[in-house]
Length: 113
Image 1 (tube, helix red, strand yellow):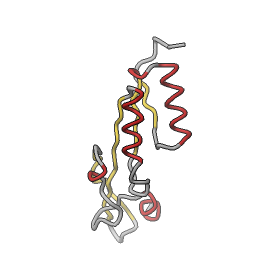
Image 2: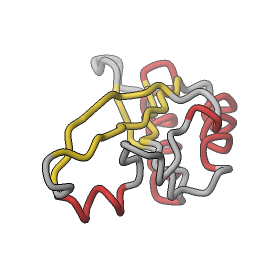
Image 3: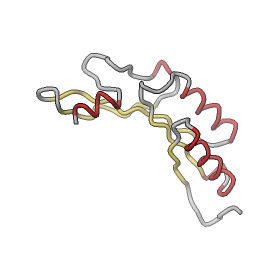
Image 4: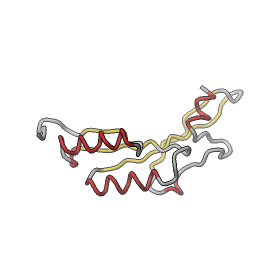
């Protein structure tokens, strides 16, 4: 059953089985035109994850927003400051882990917080 009174729905999409199942459920119940899938890119993901998510969303007719938050170390190296939120369209847009002056990986970020 479609729910006509609901506006846009943003669903987190990691490319794993759980978020894929949720996306399929929402497509069935709300329709693809109401959905925006959001993929938070982290360099620790498989390189194929972005392409998989793009293909999945294209097949389902769901809009995909893929973004990466890039941080900069501050102070004595234990803190961070958000530098930018990057729209990612292809794997080469990803700021790789270990880029000088940048923190692009969730593991490295967690150590600093």
